[in-house]
Image 1 (cartoon, rainbow, N blue to C red):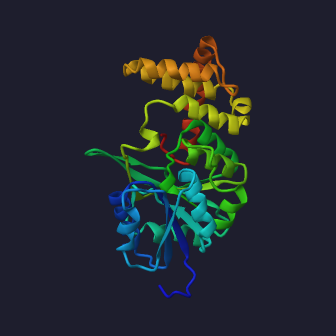
Image 2 (tube, rainbow, N blue to C red):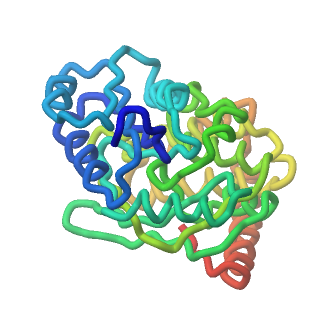
Image 3 (cartoon, rainbow, N blue to C red):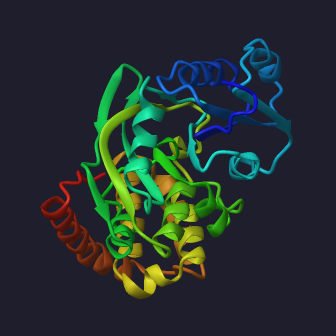
Length: 309
């Protein structure tokens, strides 16, 4: 790409001590069918020679930013601030793009000048097993998008999100105070601004690293309490959803023999100002919330064909 050419799309990858994985991620970007891009890798204080490994990749489209940020979200925001392209997409350092990811993504935005957010589909790889996580094609207006996010009836992940650069700046990027459910939180803020397009095309692979926050057994309820604290309207508009989500996690922990995690989750709920549900409230909300979520899932299937998470 000529140095004077402005990239058509910016890829942002935060990383921390994932040298081999981030090299694999970068290689998947450099192998794209669309060549006019920039790939900003923001290194959040790695100590495993990540910088040296990336320095061996001599491609002007790869931009390395090294510093000690305040977690992955701050690193993502540093990339957003440096992005030069009008469209910004993300790639976690342990994920990889399929070869036509950028070309297909940019084509969606070219066809839809008013489109602000695109959420793609992906292949989830755990060990030797792969699962297709498909959101069928369809545009969700902001109200429908919000319900889909609140009910968690669509597949979302960081590497699935693409947005207009100006839109990301307008909502303030990622919230650095949200360490878990950060993609859900970002999209909830987008849903207050407008809708989003779902793409049924699988254009990347999600790998589950051992040090991924989302893999941790503990801390779900604490993270959910933080989410509700950031978005209190969820409990007001959808009163049965928080107790359903909490109880579902506690039940899962109990059934899998993780009793300390279940107790910790309940305690986190009781001590949270945003939640604080009693056992009775949790059980009643679980029944009603499960029914509401099932109705939402049916609505999305009928209107958009979206497959539930």
